[in-house]
Length: 566
View 1 (cartoon, helix red, strand yellow):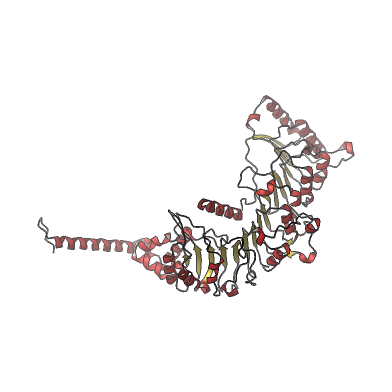
View 2: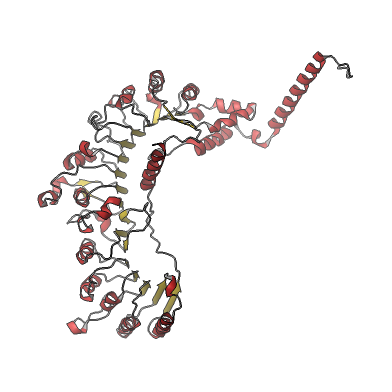
């Protein structure tokens, strides 16, 4: 019993404060014990903790972005261990929660190693970023030795130091890694250092599926490394350290299960004879590499159209493969798109059965240097924006595509001099299934003339019998007379157009007196076309090709972070 009064002894006050604090903590514990979330089974609560941890710190297993960030704390999920005793006991009771090992905080990483018991490990080795700057975290020999001894438990290893530790850091990883499924190695190596990956894990990685290598060109000390690979990314290889075309194809041949291949500033060597006709000859049949499981191919920042064409000429790609080619420098190259695709595309099955083709000028955004993309039977080719595109370039593109199945065509590039209708007619004749034609920001007159008949040359055949829809966008020289001739001819011959859309996105053309006259003339076409529309400020053409691709975004994110650190 405490006696309260003005003369209460100091020891009594201290005992009272201690008792009140104990009672308060006890009440808090009782309340927490009856909280609904504490009625959950421990397994369910641990699963919630795991989801929380994955949201705050877990990169993807392939194209893992583990570049350190000053505001990032990979151990942020540990706040759950300070909520109450039940949560803390739950977290410590499940070793798998401690399986991500991150060197950003080396002392915490060692504690995680101990608490993870025998659980499979996901290991992220990178340097530390503090508000004051970048701090080395991988110069501790004892730390690396301790981590590497757990190699048999590795399921993922992502190594991305920012300092020049060099390949010497790899010598610690000599123990077998039988469970390893994902491996990322991004080292800053000098130009004079060996670009071959040294032997890792004693050459024993029997389950490796996803591999990302920066700077390294080959892995001769790891002959079985590619046996089970499904995902391979090679990035930022020094030009002098690259393999020959034959050597590079031989490397890919050791990866028969590839589903995704990403080559960014990497690939075969650009040799001085790149423009010799003998070097560009198609490879012999037995030299072709059949990548029958490949779902996605990314070629980024290559420096030569000819090398891309030569590389593609060595491959057999299934029709389901998506292809993305991007390179800002190639838009300014003296080469043209005529050399981007090999002379024979017989083995490039994604180019067969194409139903949609978009020929466009390159977007003005600097972060969209997409040259060519093929996905889900849709082909997009971007041309460098100049006053015009050479006629032979445009014709060459059409010559390398199977036109028979095309149902939609967008023509957004121009020629100087403008390609005559006589050149367009053979192209359209090869498209019997074309249903939708988009003419984008270029003169439409010659193209429209090719869609009728050519009585002056004795050609009375009507091209594109399935054509039902035409959209013309921002044609400043649009001729209603040509539209009338096409509409009347096709209606008279029994294949009338169903839809015509005239789109204007140029503000000063809206509702001028001349424009209003043209609108009235277009309205008169309703006698031959079921639906005629004049549309202002329509949305831009949507390209359903998943661009920018995940690989491109990964590259740009790396460059952005690295640029901020220099």
